[in-house]
Each structure stands twice: as structure tokens, then as C-alpha cells.
Amino acid sequence: MPRITRTALIQAANALPDSDDLDAIKKAMIDKHVTLIEEAADKGANVCCLQEIFYGPYFCAEQEKRWYEIAEPIPDGPTIKLMQELAKKHRMVMVVPIYEVAMTGVYYNTAAVIDEQGNYLGKYRKHHIPHCQPGFWEKFYFKPGNGGYPVFDTIFGKIGVYICYDRHFPEGARALGLNGAEIVFNPSATVAGLSEYLWKLEQPAHAVANQYYVGAINRVGMESPWNIGEFYGQSYLCNPRGQIMVEGSRDSDEVVIADLDLDMIREVRDTWQFFRDRRPESYNQLTDI
Image (cartoon, rainbow, N blue to C red; front, side):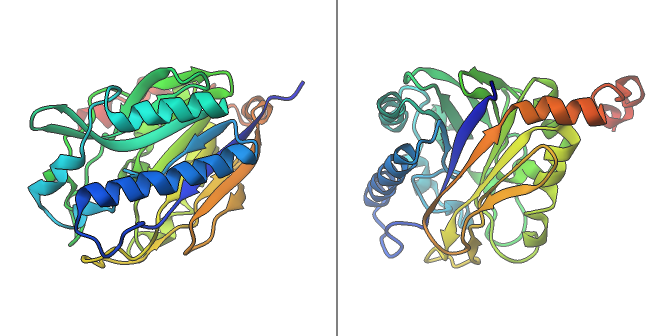
């Protein structure tokens, strides 16, 4: 019997673009996403992934300590507790990216993974932290991830997470494949311009190289007061052959959904045999440099 996992990606614009009230922004974004999660559940989603730091704007466009206030512990903060309740209610696995405080003064860009019974399975902390171009000042906010490249075993498949800028680095994508991932999510916040042409190039390439499904999520709209560029949406799911199955709009809140046939992974791997033909003993230089 085929293993079919209905998978949802949620892309959304800032709910309060003209507000400077951090608590109000956070609440409005959470409320918006609760509605979109309900929509995903109504459409029969088994797994749902939200966008990078889903409950706020992309505040890395400035360097201001006030944004530390929206960070929460994982899993004991109120947002993850709420998402555990929603996951249990909808019998849906959830990938929830938030701003994590590990201890006073130590912050990570993190995604929590929750199973369909509401159990917290673990987290992935973003490894590669950009600090480049006006508007991408992430090293001010995030410590590089220190938890490796975990894969979470759920009844709907084995799930891995990569976050935004991570997608430019094939090494972690490979590690997720070797660790058994069947679906890899990349929640992002990326704007039109320099790297937009890579959006539909790199991640389908990861899917092909590792023969797994990829779910790429990007927010939408312009975000005041920074206006660093248009968050261009176009969230998509692609299969292990690198073919885009479904794609979201450029400018609208949306639940992007598709049925993933996990049995295709074995079919494609048996055809290409990339993992069989790897030569890890010849790759030492990759970690020596």
C-alpha cells in the first residue's frame, strides 16, 4: 500500500505591518497562523510547516536588542505549547520555527518538531548564519546551531529541517539524507533580488542529490519600516526527481498543499544509486579546509 503524506506549507505576510508593538505583532501573527493551520487541517494535511520565525516580521533587517524580547524557550514557551495543542487537535505533525532563547543572552533561530499526538520530538537550530548585505544582520541575533542535523521519525515520514540561508550549503542537506530524511523542510525569509534565481534551483538540486522531498517556504509582502525588498512567496514542494509539484503565489497568504508518495524515494534511489556510489573516503579535504 503506498505511503502517501499530505503535506502543507504556510506562507503569510506580516499581520500588523504598521505597528511597533512587539506583543501585538506577535499575537496577530499567531492568530493568523492558527486560522491557516485550521485550513491546512480541513484540507487533510498530515504534516504542516510554518515559515521562518513565523510569529514576527523579519526583524534582522535592523540590529536592535528589543527583538530579543520575542524569543521563547523550547519546548516550554507558550507558542510551542499552543502548537502542541493544535497538533494534537488536528492529528497533524507540525514544524514550528520560532526565535529561541536557550539561556539569558543566548539565542537561536530554531524549528521545533511536534508529532500528531502533540508530543515534542526535538528541534533543529539553524547552522549557517548570514551577516551580509544591508538588511541581513543575523549574527546580531542568532548563535550558530549546535545540534547537528537531526531527523525526526513520525508516522507520516522521517522529517528533517534546514532553515533559510542553510539552503546554500549542500553539506547539511547531504547529512539530512544520510540521516534518513524523507521530507526536508526549509522555512525561509528571502527577498527579491540577488538570490531569487536560486530559489527554484538549489533546493530541487538537494532533492535530486539526496532523493528526498523538499518543502521550501517563504513569506510574502513588504515589511515596514525597513522595506529591504519584496518577500516573494512561491513556497513549493518538489519530489525526489527535483520536479516542483505545487507552488504558492508570489504575494498572498496561502496554504500550499500536495500529496507526497514516500515510496517514490526508494524507486528513485534504486534507479540512481547516488548513496551507493558515494566516495566518503575521498572527501577529507571538505573538512580540512
